[in-house]
Length: 143
Image (tube, rainbow, N blue to C red; front, side):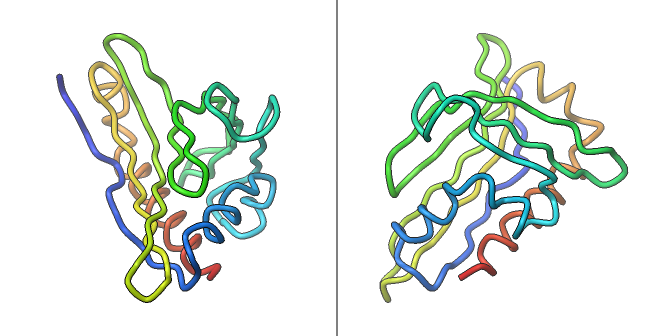
């Protein structure tokens, strides 16, 4: 199956993983610290598998449009994955928070698509990569 990566990067945060994870989980604040998020919130409760995340990304040259995606994986203080997971098409976004040797945190930020979504997203690949790089840098800068 065709697979394309839009983000696969690691940034450092000068706080323990649990603290970085808690900061990240404050979804309404994303628009305050990230220049690439116009608005974000959880639609049906707290972070958990099956919850719905709504966010409006700011992609270069495009107006912010709300996206609603289910949370596919949630492990407290460690990992969050959301996205579209269909039989012949997937687009997933994952953040993993792991400890570093000095007590700080490494944040692994990944986004990829598989199947037909890879072909549909081809025209906006550069914009998706720019969005992800900026979001990751701005998140790391908060610590």
